[in-house]
Amino acid sequence: MNIDLPIVFTVLMGVSILAYVVLDGYDLGVGILLPFATSSEQNVMVSSIGPFWDANETWLVLGVGLLLVAFPVAHGEVLTALYMPVLIMLLGLILRGVAFEMRIKAVGWHRELWNWFFWVGSVVAALAQGVMLGLYITGFSHGIGYYIFALVVALGVVGGYVLLGATWLIVRASGDLQKKALRWTRLGLLGLAVALVLVTLGTMLESATIREKWLEFPALLAIMLIPIALVVALGWVWHAAQRISEGLPESEWTPFIGTVSIYVIAFLGLVYSIYPYIIIDRMTIWEAAAHPSSLTIVLIGALIVLPMIVIYSGYAYYVFRGKAQEKLYD
Image (cartoon, rainbow, N blue to C red; front, side, top):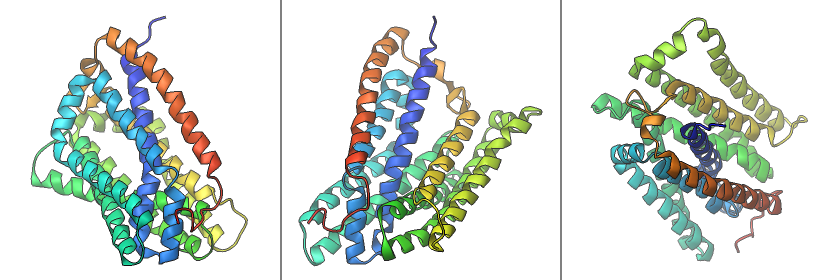
């Protein structure tokens, strides 16, 4: 049986990136929301992500690693075009990691200072990732209009991460903090909706190929299920958050699961738009792929490492399930 290895690695890389966006997205969102909580609530917020955030970033390493070894030509072009936002993202993640460790040991105003550094690191990392997305979907085009578009998309990504963080806190927090998380959920929904519209319009306006794929009849009838599903998922999250805030029967997991479904649907739409390109209108996955012999060896390693990451992450989430405790790191 012949296996199309470039497609296999495209799927693996896509799953890794999506897992990173969802998992590290919620802890970045919690970091972004940190200044809007009281001191005791901040401790609960940090405790809610503390056991997981390191493992969540593993998916970013895996995704970039797969891009390097499976699509080396594309890796060179993508990382060259995104050198500055990638560097800024890494600096933000480093600052966030240092601040997380230091705030645990700090007391008094020193802890407050490190809380602000944690917030800065989270915001910087989220904005940088949004800029990277904005530049990528416009094919790394240059010009003030493209840079403004990338910045607006970055703000939308921050809103999307706020939604992930808020819905995560609905599950992990209680009392006043959970009530705040429900309010933050509505704000995050608006931000994510703006980001989805901008990414869709920007991608279609930039690429005639993508525009034709979305507007071609009769495929249009089937593809319209994607935006319809997004609208339904957005309404589902809003409705679930409203029911919880009113004390009506509703699982606390529903808003978070609904938010994850939004990301999955949006990601599928982006994949449909871009495929078979790895760089829009410039390079297909087959043109960028490494030699089949190299891909075969790397696939064996990936099939060993990937289940280990899933098992470890699943075990961590199982052990630290339930409501977060304020004194976890004291």
